[in-house]
Image (cartoon, rainbow, N blue to C red; front, side, top):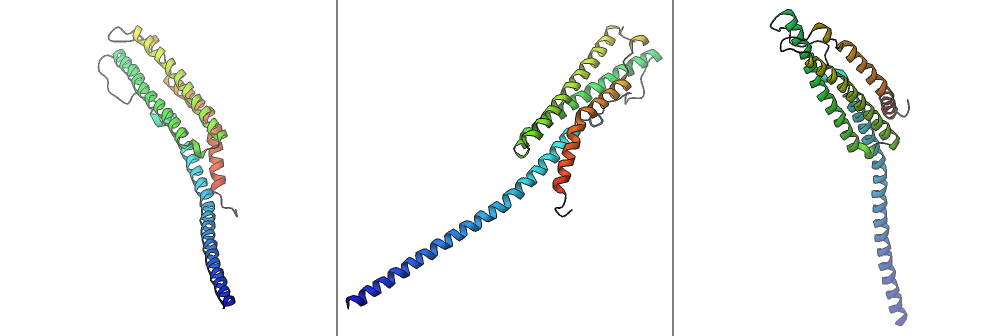
Length: 210
């Protein structure tokens, strides 16, 4: 009788143990499935975020270029009143005004680019982040220098303005050369990072079998 009771008790214990073991196996299996899924998703998600950050960085740098801000060599307004010299003086000051407005947009674009870099820095490598930062600093620096140069020429013209005209020899700021020089410097300053960002994005988007 005792042997039968012990046998039954042992059988119940084994069934309970097996049940608990099966539950633990199922829990571990579920945890492993979740972990495996997470490990599969995380790299893909980060890679996509990385690509998006690189694309945004490229766009932010490009948006600092001169044509985006409407720097001009001649005024938009075609008609000015007064004598020929008065008209030429009015045109001269109008070009200054339009280019000062362009500088406001240019400085804003650099500020926005810095903000983008800070927002997406977590998805950029430290090396790329540093290169973007250094490029933006260089852009801001040459825009500042160019703005200062133009401001000095504008103030100089104002000194010779008698209320009607600025003498022709004092209307000597070459806007064509000025804007051309800025475009060239922008291209030189940004070429390295633009080419590198394009190359990285193209490589990441290239099919694995290609």
